[in-house]
Image (cartoon, rainbow, N blue to C red; front, side, top):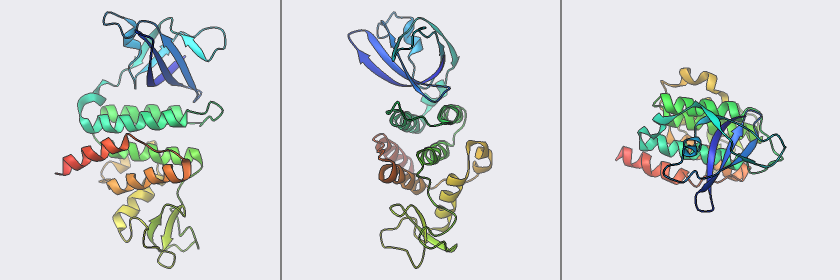
Length: 244
């Protein structure tokens, strides 16, 4: 069974429960005995963000016992900078919250998660990776922002983004609390993020992503998807430190 690990849970004194996303876009849990011991060889199979092939129990149980496995892909360069780590934490938390309900399966989640980790590991456009993944999450949740025209009247001359209304608005329907008001470049980048896929990543690398676009996507996830990313605060502190 191929898995991307996204969460660790302490269990008893020396054991770990790891949650992973399988290729069928479902959450799978394994109990790894002795993983917290300094001398444990099984600890190497509990690294978050890595892709493994785990040996799975024959019976269909919710919690599998770890019996061995192989490392498929180690994304060790993610730990090279604080910004990468901050984005990584946001990705892990978002995947965890998408996988909380075992009855809900989001087709394409494994593919997009693995691609996001690969790009985060290999490249230095961290905010673009997170923005694309957050936009993918919105689409999978069915809360994709309306970015082609005004969400209220279908007018194509837009001036702002209204998170509560669900997308772009024109001057007539603009309200004081709307975001990205008259910031043409930020509006354009927000549209790109919600129109593009990871297959378009190379075309977007030359663009400087506006952090306000990520703020808006975070708000979409919170307001329309009931997902609040606690790890996002660390990302904000890192980006502010970089600017200062």
